[in-house]
Length: 129
Image (cartoon, rainbow, N blue to C red; front, side):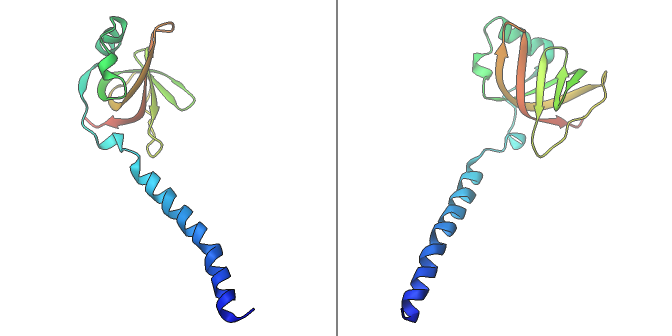
């Protein structure tokens, strides 16, 4: 085996690793930044949940909304507002307000559970008043 064949084997084995790295970088850049988006709807917890109870909230699914409400509990990493809004914080931010505090949050509305009467948001960040 001469030098050229040896170099070709090395390059041929490194090319898939470079291609995989470029693919991962490209797919990471495709994910939207929900924290930077403007909300399409702003209200309090009761009004937002009421819209879903009356089947008026379908246009808000997978949209960014801004909601203010009182913190009523925690469930591992989740924050519960007004006993009905379950907020999953954005992975880059932490959300740890004290229970009883009124806060304003922004996040993507991902679904309403009519059996439990709960609305879920993900990618939630706290808005400073």
